[in-house]
Length: 610
Image 1 (cartoon, rainbow, N blue to C red):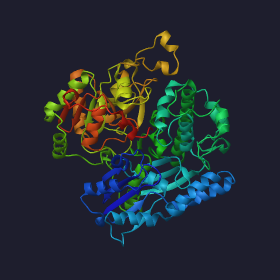
Image 2 (cartoon, one colour):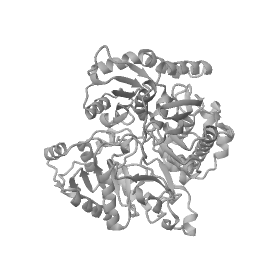
Image 3 (tube, rainbow, N blue to C red):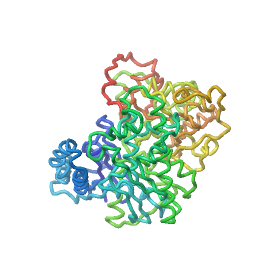
Image 4 (cartoon, rainbow, N blue to C red):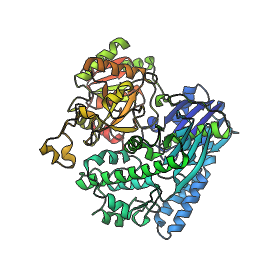
């Protein structure tokens, strides 16, 4: 039985195909349209999933959408009425879209599916609740028979925080916190206020936090959020504008923090760094209190997480270090994209009541669920543009790339199926040597074209993670932050300790400076031979050569661009940046050998800055 899950029309549209409970494919629409966080109907993602599954749309038994639009419309109307007459401008902007499109979503979905080849009569079209889809995406692929499930995001229909008990093939709702009181929207409000893009720049705020001091924590707790001991909370809406306005915060919020929001792309000041540190500390405290409450109320040993806040890997690391649970598992596509997968799994397990079996890891297959380019297509493309290349078998390629990396070269690594979710996991990655003191600045400024403070993540052989980091669990999806062990840290001099904020940026913190953040932490990916044997083999070769089982891993794209999907996009990104080598499966390309590339800076306008 084939079930197609869809998320669309808000942000991060995606499609997922499951067959008799097995995840066959999943992909985000942005990867095909090249528009980051694309919210449009995911026709390309759907067609890709069907192609991978080798079926037509007419062979799909159920289509399910990850949201209930009528309930969301009810929330919209109730919110505007409760705040009236405030929000009239926002109301006038929102209503035409709802009255023309979103209110009649079932009809629109059917039209879009028919245009893709579905029968006009159409198979059953189902709808899950938003947080139900999140919870299903977190629990059903997890390695746990029984677990608590905590979903934290901006807002679904009404829920912003929800708790579930997952057992076998059932998800039993426990309790929820409703809009406008939202941890996700609180964090997004600070994302907006510090000059980053909402629903895109939250991870920048998290990355900026270690450069600041938590001087605004009490300001936030005393004015913005009424946080209870059990982790439940209410926001003081007098400081926010997102419920009915066109901005996240208002003048009262600005007064509280000593001035207006930072203009995007302007200079970052110590204020933004201190604000980032403070809201990160508050977020971690909320998440920890909620986790303690869930553990106490449900008396379970395991926790699953989903929703956009579950991408806050610093908070995830705190939960793990508190030892509240034996283990936690986070859906790698924790945001709205993962809702497509959760909705499909919910139909299989909950609607159809099918039995569930678990394995020792999970059923996400390493999140390598997207399309794959074959050797013939790669060769045809490279020949068509007269790009010189070498074709090397694995036993030659991996030692060669290990040497290239050890010489401080930067390598584009395009292998296997594309990742599902926001993280590059060794399928569409840019790689570097973590021991190099210059690697962070080179990769940020000359390859990614992004802010210099942004940290890079380490990929490490899973069997070596506890040798280097204070982590005794796997972290295959780069969703856990842990600290580097003391023996690899470099102590600061007295002069260095006196520095503040961004002044600390270029001071090596460890023997792996390219992946060590200011507080000696790192966002870790453990690499496993079962899910990515080629990437694991490369890391083994690098360890054999250098004694270091770690590589810098960042996403194969430039700032504002979605992850590259095709060999053409990988080659263009390679040529437009100062990458040194490109590996497309077994094809190796060296930058000096390539045809002259026209230095046209206009391409940077293709991608809207995040």
